[in-house]
Image (cartoon, rainbow, N blue to C red; front, side, top):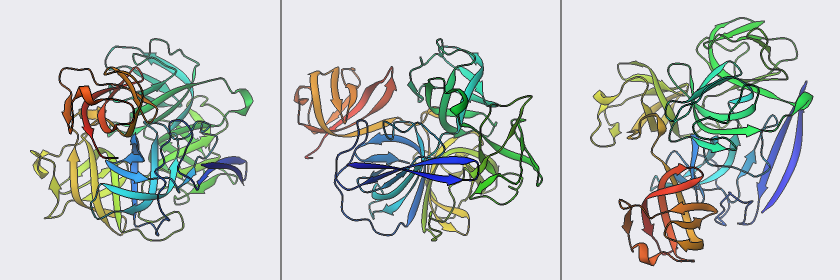
Length: 404
């Protein structure tokens, strides 16, 4: 696969765009399937990357071999898309509802900047950065930092992807410790607008954001309305809980493609907020139940509560996602795990082999095998592996042998 880097220059801001084209081979950690040409997008999916082989977002496996990968505002991108990164994917969803083709994948971190406080713990660990409280859990992917945050220090530079909870905290899906960047840093934060004027925003986390003539707006009204979930890009960390925005971007899925075309379908993963009757929001997207909305068993509409992590599939009616199916996470706020699809490589033992570059341990007594047994694991065998990431290793709960 050929990667092309291009700079887009906005007033006072550099944005890095990473283009992926042709071929079926990607950088380490990325998965291509050598798919066919892309049709115009009919769907948008917003959520963390939950697997590769190709790219798995909101439970759907999308062929991303010909997708345009967009990485803005100085986000770390040199090693490609990674587990836990939250993306906005445009593409076509196949009739089976579980596969599709991606035409564009936008990756954007939610928080980037120095840590201001840390509460390490084996469970329930959290830290603060850029005015945001960041919670980690068993579903968080960690890069260069321990899962209990025992090696994270005040002043460390981090980049965080996550899902905004109804409490205003960011539930991290990926935490990466970054090297110091000095004056070259581009900082980011996220929040919900609590008050808005032409010169200033106040977010729900208390951060005050100054706006001026140089501020760039992307996908949001000017100024953003109360209730909008936005990302703020700036060149400095907060001082006295205030920042000046270089760029204000929407962090909501939206019913239109990047070219402005209307989309038919939408898939959004996040936390239920503002539940009232059959209406609520997920990651800022308005969702409405219909008489035909289905739920994963044993859940029903009566099972919905604020703060639940859900995966919503639906069709757009204006900017409202009319839910056709809702899956309430069985794993609480940590989600339902990760998935890898492809041939086994670097097989050492049942507890040490790789699928698409991910180290897998399938030695657990409770692992469910289908289409074969643990004795059939070998280099070249094609498998679908599901499980949780612990210490960088995928601890398998299910292994399915496939024909390729």
